[in-house]
Image 1: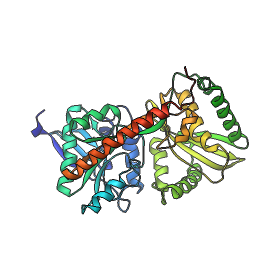
Image 2: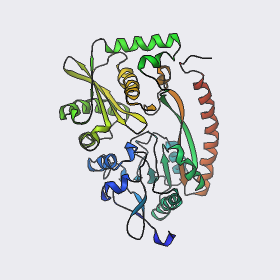
Image 3: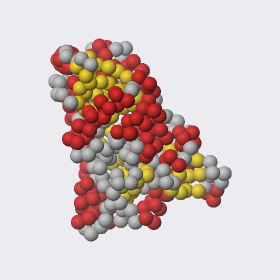
Image 4: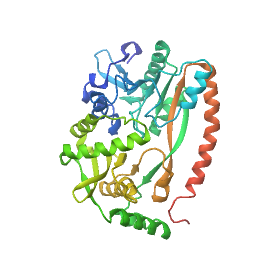
Length: 378
């Protein structure tokens, strides 16, 4: 197919495209770039007017209008909800007289989970899609474009296009063909194994845990979870990113790919955690509580997630951004990746220098963290 037969354009929303055409470009079935997830963010008002996340998906179609490639992208008026921190870049650029915002963000909104950022029927369309992102920035006066939490299999596509690469560390649990949670515990040192068993016993002493999925999740369960989510969101970000309607729509559109955990005191929910099921991973996303119970956060967010992953035969658990406390609970340090295109040549050179120095520090941190995992040594 010749380039003259291709059309690269912005569309007003993911919802303006057909679900089957969009999802056909997501063969690994990553939940966070699915049509269902992204339109739930749009239709609930979690992204769009007034949020600083304005949907501007970039697409490639052929002469017959068939969707060949797409990019979930947003014009951003701030750096909130991204989990790859560029506030220092924004400050430096603005002190030098530049205007950092708006910028182009290529991401699953509010989601520090790895996945494809270029949705492609063929990798040959990647250069056109990335060039399209660069042209959007140049023609609209955007300072930069940022693709965050890139699936490592796609990293070379950004590198080949000359984008700057940044890496960081998350903590993931890796399933080494464990038959049960107890089987996983046998891989830990004796002291760590005892600590985990103690934490689970304390957390479960006065609560019962309910696991819900699909049609089992009723409006009253979402109402309870919304209270938990608001509490966490208010403490972490000041204002929760998702609206109440977002959870209803997620339940309606992808309920079979959700696992909602609720901790009950009698019949009263006091805490909850929401997980998404991917093709090879369980993704822990949101958590909150109305009463502090010792170790309950670890139980709902980490230990229950491990049990679910083992039961479903999933390869890993991605439990979100940051959190060195995950290390002692069997979650291991892994690399995450982002890619950045900077319009201003001088600023680009400064960012490239920063990333080179930062990369050395991340490599050192990786070595130190690897040495501190709770698994048996030798």
